[in-house]
Length: 253
Image 1 (cartoon, rainbow, N blue to C red):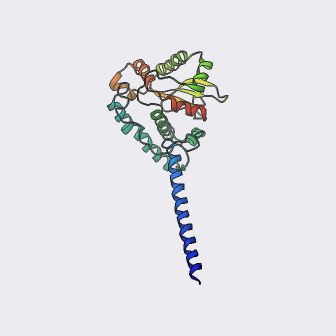
Image 2: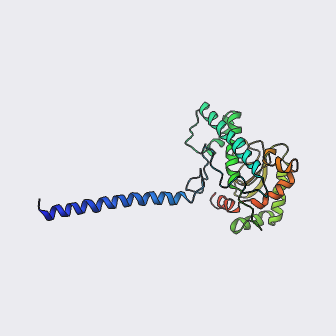
Image 3: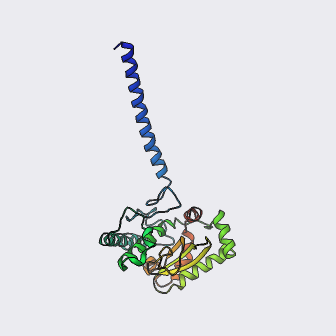
């Protein structure tokens, strides 16, 4: 083989190898970039908002919502109550031979075929994973904007009327449970509440639809700071609603 051929071959291998490395690094960088746009446990396709079986890290510190929810409540709520739901969900999934590579949401369409342990803990896990993302540090004038704002005003007359109806649903839920803003089968905004750890995605739920916003009204969510004053907790909670996240769910349902 001539020196020129050998030199050309080496140049080709060097160029190709460099290109391969660059391409691989490029894919890795692209993957990391795309991942940065998603919430933990959420697929890149925002229309899914899939929830995995593992408890995800809080998107903020325990003290980030201090003016509304104290750090001790957040720590106990996340590390004890919510963590237990995730642990018990996995136990139920193993016992009932559920594929844990699928989103938790897929269980809800056939919730009536599973045990009470699965229902309570799948619901508890999903509800809390969504609840954490539905909040952010307190901001002044915290209200929805854009298409969500327009839809709320169209359906309820005004943001204040919506806020009143949602707060009433949360205050009037007897015992433990959740209040929800959700889209029904006709993609109309609705407000309702569910007992215990049920949610609108469950086929056995009192209300059915795609959830956009939720508030936990179990006493463990607020009792250390508010004692039996659930109404005060609800009123203050509006200051930490993450309307950007709610907007994403609304626009990509």
